[in-house]
Length: 247
Image (cartoon, rainbow, N blue to C red; front, side, top):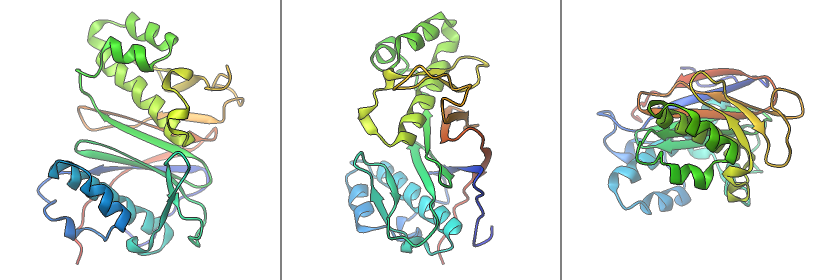
């Protein structure tokens, strides 16, 4: 891998990041994190979760640094009022939008230039895919779609719906101010991802009234993943991060 990665304006790159394995031994092997990141890592009760957070943030720093032509430790971040991380305003580089999600043994990092982007990866846990949770977070139309599916297809469909919705909300950077039940996504066996109704309108994502696209990401077995990108057409590239021990 070269020291600089190229990302065109009409592209979105999505990185799958393994967070566990024999190659992961000592957090000190990773690029230095900021004091804020270290403090956040120490808030995790279990060492396993703390280490996954450190691995994900270190990988994010390394990947972003290669696009921006700088050292990972040189990167500084700020946060929107709703908590979405972004490059600090004083960082002297072209605009690069990114979003990181992690679940158990994997993280997902999505990047685009001058287009908002959101990513979500989820471990498929059948105990979470309940009607009570769907009723709490999905829209009435989505609940109807889910309940019309054969029972054997519902768990996978639940996480299809969940990741597509989370990716969109994360791309907006609006946090809990955009309830998950305030918009509709398409999902189900063989159903392409799409926004059917936006949070503030009835716009159909098949036309230019909706400036968003949803994409399913090929995830490891037992996981579901999706990305939302602002704009009508992006070429998606899926890549996998390989851990390299720091010299």
